Length: 215
Image 1 (spheres, helix red, strand yellow):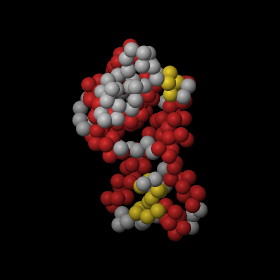
Image 2: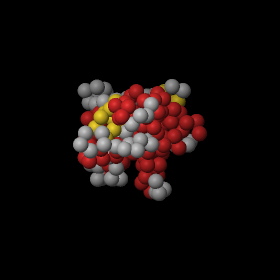
Image 3: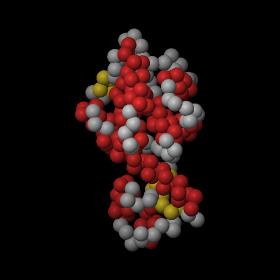
Image 4: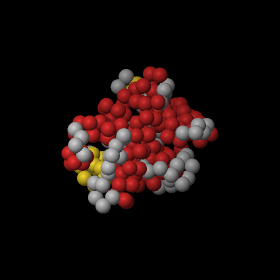
Protein backbone atom coordinates (compact mmCIF):
# COMPACT_ATOMS: atom_id res chain seq x y z
CA UNK A 1 0.00 0.00 0.00
CA UNK A 2 2.89 2.41 0.73
CA UNK A 3 4.24 1.96 -2.80
CA UNK A 4 0.76 2.58 -4.25
CA UNK A 5 0.45 5.80 -2.26
CA UNK A 6 3.83 7.07 -3.44
CA UNK A 7 3.05 6.17 -7.06
CA UNK A 8 -0.22 8.08 -6.96
CA UNK A 9 1.44 11.04 -5.22
CA UNK A 10 4.13 11.24 -7.90
CA UNK A 11 1.57 11.18 -10.70
CA UNK A 12 1.08 14.78 -11.79
CA UNK A 13 3.33 16.09 -9.01
CA UNK A 14 4.23 19.09 -11.17
CA UNK A 15 0.56 20.09 -11.61
CA UNK A 16 -1.59 22.37 -9.47
CA UNK A 17 -3.79 20.29 -7.21
CA UNK A 18 -7.46 20.25 -8.25
CA UNK A 19 -10.72 18.67 -7.11
CA UNK A 20 -10.62 16.49 -10.23
CA UNK A 21 -7.19 15.12 -9.35
CA UNK A 22 -8.23 14.35 -5.78
CA UNK A 23 -11.27 12.42 -7.01
CA UNK A 24 -9.24 10.59 -9.64
CA UNK A 25 -6.64 9.49 -7.09
CA UNK A 26 -9.34 8.43 -4.64
CA UNK A 27 -10.93 6.35 -7.38
CA UNK A 28 -7.60 4.70 -8.15
CA UNK A 29 -7.01 3.85 -4.49
CA UNK A 30 -10.49 2.50 -3.68
CA UNK A 31 -11.45 0.73 -6.91
CA UNK A 32 -11.82 -2.93 -6.02
CA UNK A 33 -12.06 -2.06 -2.32
CA UNK A 34 -15.13 0.20 -2.12
CA UNK A 35 -16.39 0.52 -5.70
CA UNK A 36 -19.60 2.16 -4.48
CA UNK A 37 -17.64 5.03 -2.91
CA UNK A 38 -14.55 5.26 -5.12
CA UNK A 39 -13.88 8.58 -6.81
CA UNK A 40 -16.69 10.65 -5.27
CA UNK A 41 -17.31 12.81 -2.23
CA UNK A 42 -19.86 11.95 0.45
CA UNK A 43 -23.43 12.86 -0.43
CA UNK A 44 -27.00 12.54 0.81
CA UNK A 45 -27.04 11.16 4.35
CA UNK A 46 -23.47 9.76 4.24
CA UNK A 47 -22.31 11.17 7.56
CA UNK A 48 -19.02 9.94 9.04
CA UNK A 49 -17.67 10.08 12.56
CA UNK A 50 -14.06 9.49 13.59
CA UNK A 51 -13.81 9.16 17.34
CA UNK A 52 -15.66 12.17 18.72
CA UNK A 53 -15.28 14.19 15.52
CA UNK A 54 -18.16 14.46 13.05
CA UNK A 55 -17.17 15.10 9.44
CA UNK A 56 -18.61 17.97 7.43
CA UNK A 57 -22.26 18.00 6.35
CA UNK A 58 -22.29 15.99 3.05
CA UNK A 59 -23.94 18.69 0.84
CA UNK A 60 -21.14 21.14 1.74
CA UNK A 61 -18.16 18.81 1.37
CA UNK A 62 -17.13 19.85 -2.15
CA UNK A 63 -17.38 23.55 -1.34
CA UNK A 64 -15.29 23.11 1.81
CA UNK A 65 -12.56 21.18 -0.02
CA UNK A 66 -12.53 23.85 -2.74
CA UNK A 67 -12.11 26.58 -0.11
CA UNK A 68 -9.28 24.68 1.55
CA UNK A 69 -7.51 24.24 -1.80
CA UNK A 70 -7.94 27.92 -2.59
CA UNK A 71 -6.50 28.96 0.75
CA UNK A 72 -3.58 26.56 0.39
CA UNK A 73 -2.74 27.87 -3.07
CA UNK A 74 -3.34 31.59 -2.46
CA UNK A 75 -2.11 32.15 1.10
CA UNK A 76 1.61 31.59 1.16
CA UNK A 77 3.33 31.73 4.55
CA UNK A 78 7.09 31.33 4.29
CA UNK A 79 7.04 27.76 5.56
CA UNK A 80 5.61 25.34 2.98
CA UNK A 81 5.61 22.52 5.54
CA UNK A 82 3.30 24.59 7.71
CA UNK A 83 0.95 25.11 4.77
CA UNK A 84 0.89 21.39 3.98
CA UNK A 85 0.28 20.52 7.63
CA UNK A 86 -2.63 22.99 7.82
CA UNK A 87 -4.21 21.66 4.61
CA UNK A 88 -3.92 18.06 5.81
CA UNK A 89 -5.57 18.86 9.14
CA UNK A 90 -8.39 20.74 7.43
CA UNK A 91 -8.89 17.96 4.86
CA UNK A 92 -9.13 15.31 7.57
CA UNK A 93 -11.59 17.41 9.58
CA UNK A 94 -13.82 17.73 6.49
CA UNK A 95 -13.41 13.96 6.00
CA UNK A 96 -14.85 14.23 2.47
CA UNK A 97 -15.09 10.54 1.59
CA UNK A 98 -17.09 7.59 2.85
CA UNK A 99 -13.84 5.62 3.10
CA UNK A 100 -10.15 6.18 2.37
CA UNK A 101 -9.79 9.64 3.90
CA UNK A 102 -6.53 8.82 5.67
CA UNK A 103 -5.00 7.17 2.63
CA UNK A 104 -5.88 9.95 0.20
CA UNK A 105 -4.85 12.53 2.80
CA UNK A 106 -1.36 11.01 2.91
CA UNK A 107 -1.27 10.96 -0.91
CA UNK A 108 -1.97 14.70 -0.84
CA UNK A 109 0.80 15.32 1.71
CA UNK A 110 3.32 13.62 -0.56
CA UNK A 111 2.03 15.28 -3.71
CA UNK A 112 2.46 18.67 -2.07
CA UNK A 113 5.92 17.79 -0.74
CA UNK A 114 7.07 16.60 -4.17
CA UNK A 115 5.78 19.79 -5.78
CA UNK A 116 7.86 21.73 -3.24
CA UNK A 117 10.98 19.74 -4.14
CA UNK A 118 10.95 17.67 -0.95
CA UNK A 119 10.98 13.89 -0.51
CA UNK A 120 7.80 11.95 0.25
CA UNK A 121 7.30 10.79 3.82
CA UNK A 122 5.74 7.81 5.54
CA UNK A 123 3.26 8.32 8.39
CA UNK A 124 3.96 4.97 10.02
CA UNK A 125 1.12 2.89 11.40
CA UNK A 126 3.00 2.17 14.63
CA UNK A 127 3.29 5.83 15.56
CA UNK A 128 -0.10 7.09 14.42
CA UNK A 129 -1.78 6.71 17.80
CA UNK A 130 1.05 8.42 19.68
CA UNK A 131 1.89 11.23 17.22
CA UNK A 132 -0.37 11.61 14.20
CA UNK A 133 -3.86 11.22 15.71
CA UNK A 134 -3.03 13.43 18.71
CA UNK A 135 -1.91 16.17 16.28
CA UNK A 136 -5.24 15.92 14.45
CA UNK A 137 -7.07 15.99 17.77
CA UNK A 138 -5.31 19.23 18.74
CA UNK A 139 -6.45 20.80 15.47
CA UNK A 140 -10.03 19.60 15.92
CA UNK A 141 -10.19 21.24 19.36
CA UNK A 142 -8.13 24.39 18.87
CA UNK A 143 -7.66 25.02 15.12
CA UNK A 144 -3.91 24.95 15.77
CA UNK A 145 -1.76 22.90 13.41
CA UNK A 146 1.54 23.34 15.28
CA UNK A 147 1.76 19.68 16.29
CA UNK A 148 1.11 18.46 12.74
CA UNK A 149 3.71 20.92 11.43
CA UNK A 150 6.26 19.62 13.93
CA UNK A 151 5.52 15.99 13.02
CA UNK A 152 5.69 16.65 9.29
CA UNK A 153 8.97 18.58 9.67
CA UNK A 154 10.53 15.65 11.54
CA UNK A 155 9.33 13.19 8.88
CA UNK A 156 10.77 15.33 6.07
CA UNK A 157 14.09 15.64 7.90
CA UNK A 158 14.19 11.87 8.43
CA UNK A 159 13.43 11.23 4.75
CA UNK A 160 16.22 13.59 3.67
CA UNK A 161 18.71 11.98 6.03
CA UNK A 162 17.82 8.53 4.75
CA UNK A 163 18.52 9.59 1.16
CA UNK A 164 21.79 11.30 2.10
CA UNK A 165 23.00 8.24 4.03
CA UNK A 166 22.14 5.81 1.22
CA UNK A 167 23.87 8.04 -1.34
CA UNK A 168 27.01 8.98 0.58
CA UNK A 169 27.76 6.27 3.14
CA UNK A 170 29.43 2.93 2.36
CA UNK A 171 26.88 1.16 4.53
CA UNK A 172 24.01 1.70 6.95
CA UNK A 173 23.73 -0.16 10.23
CA UNK A 174 21.18 -0.45 13.01
CA UNK A 175 21.07 2.44 15.42
CA UNK A 176 21.55 -0.02 18.30
CA UNK A 177 24.79 -1.27 16.73
CA UNK A 178 26.01 2.28 16.15
CA UNK A 179 25.14 3.29 19.72
CA UNK A 180 27.26 0.45 21.15
CA UNK A 181 30.25 1.53 19.09
CA UNK A 182 29.70 5.16 20.14
CA UNK A 183 29.39 4.20 23.83
CA UNK A 184 25.88 5.64 23.95
CA UNK A 185 22.92 4.05 25.72
CA UNK A 186 20.42 2.58 23.27
CA UNK A 187 17.44 4.45 24.72
CA UNK A 188 19.32 7.75 24.47
CA UNK A 189 20.12 7.09 20.81
CA UNK A 190 16.50 6.10 20.10
CA UNK A 191 15.15 9.25 21.75
CA UNK A 192 17.58 11.41 19.79
CA UNK A 193 16.53 9.64 16.59
CA UNK A 194 12.88 10.42 17.27
CA UNK A 195 13.77 14.09 17.81
CA UNK A 196 16.08 13.97 14.76
CA UNK A 197 19.05 15.27 16.72
CA UNK A 198 20.81 12.20 15.30
CA UNK A 199 20.73 11.64 11.50
CA UNK A 200 18.90 8.34 11.92
CA UNK A 201 16.04 7.02 9.83
CA UNK A 202 13.71 4.05 9.72
CA UNK A 203 13.83 1.14 7.32
CA UNK A 204 11.09 -1.48 7.81
CA UNK A 205 10.29 0.18 11.16
CA UNK A 206 13.88 -0.25 12.38
CA UNK A 207 16.05 2.75 13.20
CA UNK A 208 19.19 2.87 11.04
CA UNK A 209 22.12 5.24 10.63
CA UNK A 210 25.14 5.69 8.34
CA UNK A 211 27.93 3.41 9.54
CA UNK A 212 30.49 6.21 9.23
CA UNK A 213 28.53 8.80 11.20
CA UNK A 214 30.56 10.43 13.95
CA UNK A 215 29.38 12.77 16.67
